[in-house]
Figure (cartoon, rainbow, N blue to C red):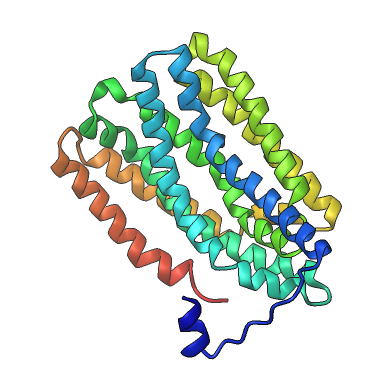
Length: 287
């Protein structure tokens, strides 16, 4: 690799003593990023370990499947958000960057909401049938766990651009502390709730921790001068989209039977065609 960079790319290396101040800054920043990575792993995955000690293997399996489906859903948003870190770095170097960050962040938030909302509504109407066909009635709790985590994920994903803004401004320390502390608090609650309520107890405890962390983060954003709560303000188009998706899904749910893969695929296919025809044309138009 060194030879390729030196000979083919004509890269010239300058060897010098690295500044201790620079090293402290690098390791300090990367340390907080590492804590955020730990949080992302323990936020919902910790429930498996707790259930393994307090409940049976069936509860662990049910909870793990619910988390897995919800993580697929959140992956849609995180892929989009990952592309905007360079944009956040560019904005952070400009004067009046806070107002510009909010404007860009609001557009990204609307885009993510428009993409994730059809997934939530589709799973709300058709997810239980899918779980029964795929896993059987004994795993019906997977449906409830998945839909709750999806709903809880939505606010944080809509504010996901703020993570890029904080990273660009090197202000992730407080965020990391808030998230880790809330996750630990949620794990403690989950442990006690799980003895009587199993996977639902885990979900309740971690959900409380998630709500607390989101509330504290919004207070932190306000303290920094970012009106990130604007990301939750729905436009008329978004309200119309909610109505259209609920109407379409309820018609399909009530007019087409259930119980076989063929009927499920018909409903899902019609719903997918509706989304592909309507959303890109009317709700994802470039501003």
